[in-house]
Amino acid sequence: MARLMLVAFDPSEVALGHGFASALGIPFDVLLLSGADPAEIGAERTLAANLGDVPPADSIEDGVVAQLGGYSHIASVSSMRSKDHLPRWAAHLGAAMVTDVIVVEAENRFRRPIVAGSMIETVEVSGSPIVMTFRPSGFAKFSPNGTAAADSITIPITDRTRRVGASARGGARPDLTAAKVIVSGGRPLKDAETFERVIGGFADSVHGAAGATRAAVDSHIAPNELQVGQTGKIVAPDLYIAAGVSGSTQHMAGIKDSKTIVAVNIDPDAPIFENADLGMVGDLFVVLPELQAKLAGKF
Amino acid sequence: MKIMVTVKRVIDPYAKVRPLSDGSGVDTTGVKFDANPFDEIAVEEAVRQKEKNPVIEIVAVSLGGTECEEQLRKALAMGADKAVLIESSENYDTLAVAEEFVALVKAESPDLVLMGKQSTDGDNNQVGQMMAALLGWPQATFASKLELADGTARVTRETDTGEETLEMNLPAIVTTDLRLNEPRYIALPGIIKARSKPLEKRPPSSTATSRVKTVKVEAVPARSAGKKVGSVDELVAELSARGLF
Ligand SMILES: Cc1cc2nc3c(=O)[nH]c(=O)nc-3n(C[C@H](O)[C@H](O)[C@H](O)COP(=O)(O)OP(=O)(O)OC[C@H]3O[C@@H](n4cnc5c(N)ncnc54)[C@H](O)[C@@H]3O)c2cc1C
Image (cartoon, rainbow over all chains, first blue to last red; front, side, top):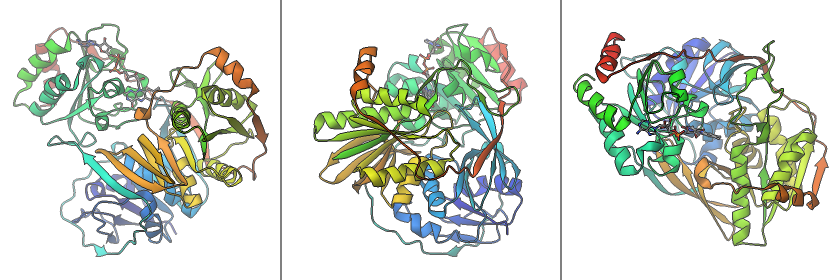
């Protein structure tokens, strides 16, 4: 019998799963690994494991898989964390896995981007269960009202891999994957201080998030978790402002689902203009401050 | 100590590619192939570890047709000691690939398997983690720093919000992210010299399975080039007209 287990690593992922679960159209349960007060999204059962910090993937594999019996589909929101954990569950279950689903065509037929998002493949999966990660931007948004009653469960932790340190930077800005406005900077931002002042300052003034290209991250202009693209974050804001970004296939792979893309580039022939809704040729160090001043208080 | 490194032959990540006109797959006519960039980072990392600790033996492995020899030769030129090609031109899904490499791990008994976090064609990001699960080994994905000591690995890995450091006992699987290192440039003579290093071909350990079948490949409809604005005022007016504020 078809049944989905939606695994949320933290409570923010529960509401993001509603659109995907509706598209799949089969009864579903939610397994919340950490945090409390999961949103009410119409799950038949909600289980809460209260893991606190989710431990390393090898330490909870057995415990999570023990909860997955009887499900035909197991899915999580795409993230570095879910990509770390879910393939282990799939292999443990002898199951096929599909990464970054953007469209559900049937219970065993899905669409997903390949080759840096330059093409979309449709895959058909045989066998059960099917393990998946999905990009919420491909599915309907849902604003829950109220939280679901959750049954507490215990997921045993086998202490194999030890987490000896962690750093979360981030600060007060919204998360890239949830932000309505993102301003991104590339290589010409020069250094971390300039990036923070020009891009960070702009982001703060529009209550948005700051993003970066790989070139900016590689040159230590921006921290790695701000990288947007094929091998970084996939974003889908209402407004994406790319300043000093050339528009490589790999960067564009991460921003295609943005509603409006604005490019500011000094080079009129920069490839980004081919994919931007609005383009302005100019020096970002002149254009961004002026734009920031004129947008003040509007977001 | 032995390090196994996996190397996949992929479409050159900088090439522009299109679907075949019948939508049955990716059109690769005239397209250049290269080693998966993340796998090159894995090879580079193995070589750097060997430079610090010369007793390390590096075996580079691949699964695919004879043409994959080219990418294995590149790994040998970078500094791998020997290469093994599991020769098959069948279709494997990610779990089947993991199963083939696990069979090879059992034969070769490496202390560490270094792999790219994903291949730039399939963009799946699965095989390393699947192998770790099948072997019951610890894993560290998205590594940006690797330190090996007596029977343990200390790995700094990238996360959604920053980074974390994991410590694990070997054997283990580590998958690489872009910032782990920058692979060395290999000039042609190096590749030619690598021809004298052993490259062994083996048949697959079992018949190919694919639970995941590609039934269609389509181009992404290009975002059409929009409008160029001449001033910031015009830009603000356009944003407002789009209902952004
Ligand atoms: C396997 C692989 C994965 C990758 N993954 C990613 C990824 O996830 N994300 C990503 O971003 N990249 C990724 N890349 C890298 C990608 O190919 C590009 O190299 C990178 O995106 C370029 O970054 P950039 O636009 O900042 O730099 P550049 O290409 O150097 O462009 C800088 C731009 O700034 C403009 N400029 C310069 N000065 C100014 C100024 N004063 N004002 C306005 N404009 C100015 C220039 O005209 C130019 O267009 C990947 C590459 C590979 C091979």
